[in-house]
Length: 286
Image (cartoon, rainbow, N blue to C red):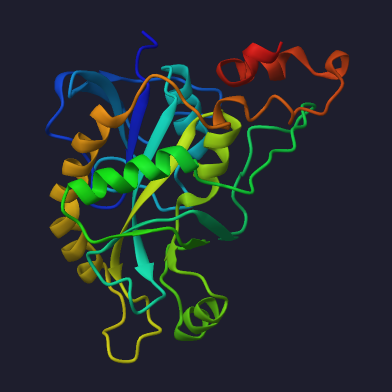
């Protein structure tokens, strides 16, 4: 059952992976409700991988409505050790052009009101998050996107906003003055929850527009976003197909032991029901 080591979370415009064979759907119940959709498990390049559309098939969920905790808990329960997120983003730099790909290495969180952690309710963990994306998986993903034929940029700060609306011109210009590179709506809390679950996480961010700071470009619209995403959909799938054979069984990063020094609550004070709720995530420590 728990033989699925890689998962792909598809963002806007990426709702399936046709290249999968021996496909089955798994509906996982979690303490945090249902995931965004059924998890599709199939074989690609000889390995079993999972696919989950972040917004649900048909794009039913806003960025704030995505059940991030349910999604990550469900993938962890299947044995997933690595997640590749496919996301749309706006560019805050001239050199990151629409239909380019960015593999970000940093996050600036500008969301509000989301549920950011599995922890609380009697079990406290303070997570190291200086490197929010797995450096090892990022490097492999960069190589895979290059192999797929894309113009790809290695590194960059991803500012995450609440949405679902796009930025005002004033907001966009201020974000740009902060030195961020790309802008989107879903990497938070997804990346943090993946780290809490000790899952390696990296994002393949597809540039769809220049947000609204660029005076010579049209303001971002859903039509613009989807046109550019659809143009890159095949690229996303080629990159994943190139990535799978590059992955070995070993993870040389520290993501797989992220909780080893994070849990601070005295063990005898931790509610047993909280440990049970987070069993796939914390069981190795109890």
